[in-house]
Length: 250
Image: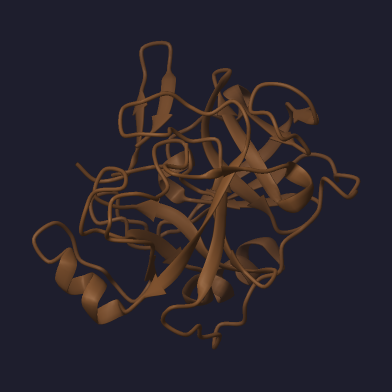
């Protein structure tokens, strides 16, 4: 099963799992080290992560917010803890999904949340830089990813923020790895280990993959969580950079 946000609606309970992603094998951290990271909450449940790209816009994965209603959507900013602290934003202006998003392949897995009011930026609430559309990153580069997702596939969410560092993986080798599961497109970038020890997991989806202060990826999908032989797959931010500018003016 892939990491994907699975939204079950009866009175609507949401959960991020093709594999959405607590961090498996992660280390405790604080929001001060990742002040751009936010918790996306739906029907009072944490479903995904996201990143502040301006004082009014949040970047996340399309599968995290596709089909959601703004009245049930909240965002927590500025907190190390998933369910307390920081500021809980309850007024959302709009949700935007990439028009080419494919819920089966997770191609163009990117979305935007617009806040009704402008946030005051502080040491624990800050924006992350975005790459240019021509930005490239070398294979093996160590990037950081953080979140409140599950610590094992099918496990429980983490109450406090965890992070890990993962290396960028060759597009060719990643495509070959997933050849019988899914297509790794040009709008995706792979990062992680094949040892099955460290990875993102359900609930981490939508969070930022960051290198040197620049968000290079969005947690998107994978083979469950920390499955031996499979790295994680992220939306490549440089590939959808012009879309962000078009939709959010950033």
